[in-house]
Length: 191
Image 1 (spheres, one colour):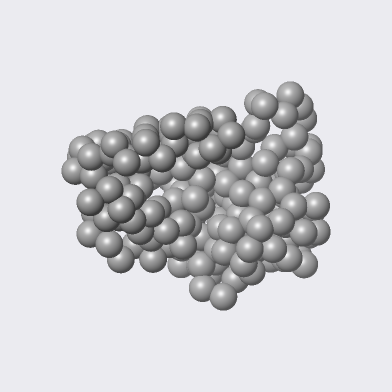
Image 2 (image 1 turned 90 degrees about the horizontal axis):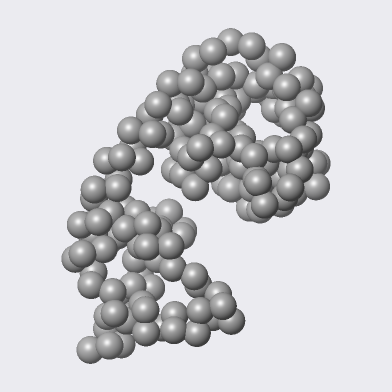
């Protein structure tokens, strides 16, 4: 029984991690488990497996349903404030939409994906740039740019150019906020 319960937890985590979203209530479960802020590093949380075993799937899903409503509202508010940028600062990488997300950086994956869809629908590149500060860096002059893409768009070309990495549909890098302002100046239109 414990094996089945743990297996289901991993199936839900995998379903979200690789963006399949095939399991029932998968988005709600993922949102609920993220809200629990579980430390997944076994070296720092040696009771990790007991913690995962003790999860009640239904309560995680119910918690997730509540938080999904709140998160969707925050994402929509951010999307409403999106603006066009020149990706990379010159026309080599084209144009896409971006948002400032200091307050909701933890929603960068879903926000970035929806931003990439919006960008594509506006006939820009199918890439979304979620921009936020990382206080843990202790450097207010830097922003993190988290790129998400849809379709065949490859974000790694841009991220690697600026010393970052990731994979085709999700990558990130650090950039000076002054340089990012120049990206905005090339695409001053609010959308």
